[in-house]
Image 1: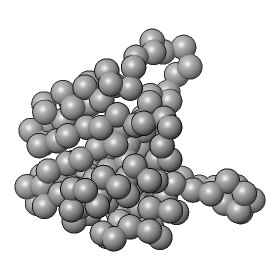
Image 2: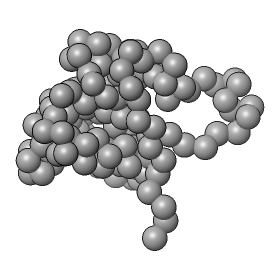
Image 3: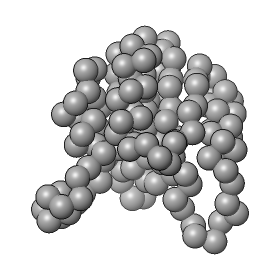
Image 4: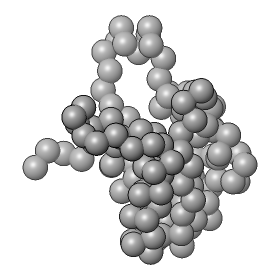
Length: 133
Protein backbone atom coordinates (compact mmCIF):
# COMPACT_ATOMS: atom_id res chain seq x y z
CA UNK A 1 0.00 0.00 0.00
CA UNK A 2 1.15 3.54 -0.74
CA UNK A 3 0.01 6.64 1.14
CA UNK A 4 0.63 10.22 0.00
CA UNK A 5 0.39 13.05 2.51
CA UNK A 6 0.70 16.80 2.03
CA UNK A 7 2.57 18.22 5.01
CA UNK A 8 3.22 21.75 6.19
CA UNK A 9 4.30 22.53 9.74
CA UNK A 10 0.91 23.77 10.96
CA UNK A 11 -1.56 22.17 13.39
CA UNK A 12 -3.52 20.83 10.42
CA UNK A 13 -0.36 19.54 8.77
CA UNK A 14 0.75 17.79 11.96
CA UNK A 15 -2.67 16.15 12.29
CA UNK A 16 -2.51 14.95 8.68
CA UNK A 17 1.00 13.57 9.16
CA UNK A 18 -0.01 11.81 12.39
CA UNK A 19 -3.01 10.21 10.63
CA UNK A 20 -0.84 9.14 7.70
CA UNK A 21 1.76 7.62 10.04
CA UNK A 22 -0.94 5.71 11.93
CA UNK A 23 -2.41 4.40 8.68
CA UNK A 24 1.04 3.46 7.34
CA UNK A 25 1.76 1.46 10.49
CA UNK A 26 -1.59 -0.36 10.42
CA UNK A 27 -1.34 -1.26 6.74
CA UNK A 28 2.47 -1.65 6.48
CA UNK A 29 2.41 1.06 3.81
CA UNK A 30 5.05 3.25 2.24
CA UNK A 31 4.57 6.92 3.04
CA UNK A 32 5.22 9.57 0.38
CA UNK A 33 5.32 13.07 1.87
CA UNK A 34 5.12 16.35 0.00
CA UNK A 35 6.79 18.62 2.54
CA UNK A 36 6.19 22.33 2.52
CA UNK A 37 8.22 24.95 4.37
CA UNK A 38 8.07 25.41 8.11
CA UNK A 39 5.41 28.10 8.54
CA UNK A 40 5.73 28.30 12.30
CA UNK A 41 7.49 31.03 14.25
CA UNK A 42 8.60 33.87 11.99
CA UNK A 43 11.73 34.26 14.10
CA UNK A 44 12.69 30.58 13.77
CA UNK A 45 15.98 29.72 12.10
CA UNK A 46 15.25 29.28 8.41
CA UNK A 47 16.40 26.10 6.67
CA UNK A 48 16.14 25.11 3.04
CA UNK A 49 13.24 23.02 1.76
CA UNK A 50 15.70 20.16 1.22
CA UNK A 51 16.98 20.37 4.80
CA UNK A 52 13.40 20.46 6.06
CA UNK A 53 12.60 17.34 3.99
CA UNK A 54 15.72 15.55 5.26
CA UNK A 55 14.82 16.34 8.88
CA UNK A 56 11.28 15.06 8.35
CA UNK A 57 12.58 11.86 6.74
CA UNK A 58 14.90 11.32 9.71
CA UNK A 59 11.92 11.83 12.06
CA UNK A 60 9.87 9.25 10.14
CA UNK A 61 12.82 6.82 10.04
CA UNK A 62 12.96 7.10 13.83
CA UNK A 63 9.30 6.06 13.94
CA UNK A 64 10.11 3.07 11.72
CA UNK A 65 7.89 4.25 8.87
CA UNK A 66 9.11 3.57 5.33
CA UNK A 67 9.10 6.97 3.67
CA UNK A 68 10.17 9.19 0.84
CA UNK A 69 9.95 12.91 1.51
CA UNK A 70 9.78 15.32 -1.41
CA UNK A 71 10.49 18.99 -0.77
CA UNK A 72 7.73 21.24 -2.07
CA UNK A 73 8.59 22.87 -5.37
CA UNK A 74 7.69 26.55 -4.81
CA UNK A 75 7.01 26.97 -8.54
CA UNK A 76 4.29 24.28 -8.48
CA UNK A 77 0.80 24.40 -7.05
CA UNK A 78 0.68 22.19 -3.91
CA UNK A 79 -2.50 20.44 -5.09
CA UNK A 80 -0.79 19.54 -8.38
CA UNK A 81 2.19 18.17 -6.47
CA UNK A 82 0.03 16.00 -4.24
CA UNK A 83 -2.13 14.75 -7.11
CA UNK A 84 0.89 14.05 -9.34
CA UNK A 85 2.73 12.19 -6.58
CA UNK A 86 -0.40 10.14 -5.87
CA UNK A 87 -0.66 9.14 -9.54
CA UNK A 88 3.05 8.38 -9.91
CA UNK A 89 3.20 6.29 -6.73
CA UNK A 90 -0.08 4.50 -7.35
CA UNK A 91 -1.40 5.84 -4.05
CA UNK A 92 -4.07 3.85 -2.30
CA UNK A 93 -4.80 6.79 0.01
CA UNK A 94 -4.12 10.53 0.15
CA UNK A 95 -4.10 12.32 3.52
CA UNK A 96 -4.51 16.09 3.79
CA UNK A 97 -5.07 18.56 6.59
CA UNK A 98 -8.05 20.89 6.41
CA UNK A 99 -8.87 24.12 8.20
CA UNK A 100 -11.93 26.28 8.54
CA UNK A 101 -12.35 29.06 6.00
CA UNK A 102 -14.90 31.79 5.67
CA UNK A 103 -17.42 31.49 2.84
CA UNK A 104 -15.74 34.43 1.07
CA UNK A 105 -12.32 32.82 1.52
CA UNK A 106 -13.60 29.61 -0.05
CA UNK A 107 -15.07 31.51 -2.97
CA UNK A 108 -12.17 33.82 -3.76
CA UNK A 109 -9.01 31.96 -2.85
CA UNK A 110 -9.56 28.35 -3.88
CA UNK A 111 -8.24 25.57 -1.74
CA UNK A 112 -5.54 22.95 -2.05
CA UNK A 113 -7.65 20.56 0.02
CA UNK A 114 -10.72 21.19 -2.11
CA UNK A 115 -8.83 20.48 -5.34
CA UNK A 116 -7.30 17.31 -3.95
CA UNK A 117 -10.69 16.10 -2.69
CA UNK A 118 -12.37 16.75 -6.03
CA UNK A 119 -9.62 15.66 -8.43
CA UNK A 120 -7.93 12.71 -6.71
CA UNK A 121 -8.20 9.25 -8.20
CA UNK A 122 -7.54 7.64 -4.79
CA UNK A 123 -9.60 7.95 -1.61
CA UNK A 124 -8.76 11.08 0.40
CA UNK A 125 -8.68 11.30 4.19
CA UNK A 126 -9.24 14.91 5.26
CA UNK A 127 -8.01 15.52 8.81
CA UNK A 128 -8.84 18.44 11.11
CA UNK A 129 -6.29 19.85 13.53
CA UNK A 130 -5.88 18.15 16.90
CA UNK A 131 -8.21 19.53 19.56
CA UNK A 132 -6.59 22.03 21.92
CA UNK A 133 -5.47 20.44 25.14
